Length: 111
Image (cartoon, rainbow, N blue to C red; front, side, top):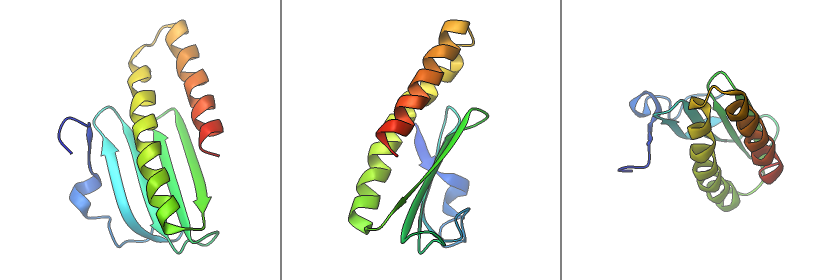
């Protein structure tokens, strides 16, 4: 994934391990600016779960029933999460408000 900012979390060592939703991790990536997104299958709540977050700022989990939908949503969320993590560097009040609004929009877009 050149120039995307995303790379395999822990060099792919987490793949096949149990994730935070008690499912098998099938995709796990980290962004250079401080975000992570993980796709699990066969979780305790649903066939698929996507957990993502911006380090120190937000965490969000979704549950999905279909693999094709889960993979498509994972990619869409990854793109939106990259845009969101870029807002974290602005420590001004306006920057914090923009991040908070962006995080709210993210959760609304990916319920």
